[in-house]
Picture (cartoon, rainbow, N blue to C red):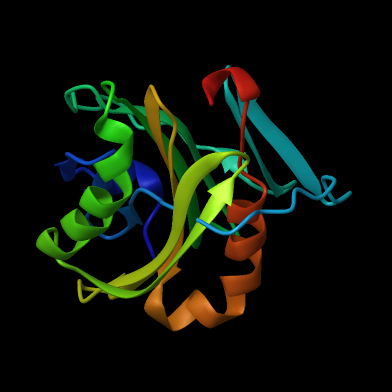
Length: 192
């Protein structure tokens, strides 16, 4: 079992667009390039929204606070939630991009996962609205081992990384929930 998120204290800046929090739990960024169909929010889901982004979570997910977050350069932790009795973690991080950074953001983010100790199992390029994106599945042989799904999106001015993860041993039972959460990510048209 992953301890409550408040006990996780090791942060690693994710230079290509997010932050990794690795300890007993994990919080990693997301990326995604084929058209994405946006469905209505199911009744058992809640919409989490701020400024230019939104995504849907099961209604039993709760916001999670972490005291004393270290400064992670220009990366911002926008949302952090736990669900499934603390076994499932979801976060969204953003990072400002300079003109031209958008093109390399996805590749750099995926490449960084390997250098941060993650084994990239698969990736699929798609579009979120008109924005280039990638869905990435990766695992880390930490103690205990973890697995995450991520959707990483590059707008002209901001990189977005939505992550859903849990223990490797729990992953297959929550895969569909994570896929549903990631597929609900929307970026407002003005951010495109």
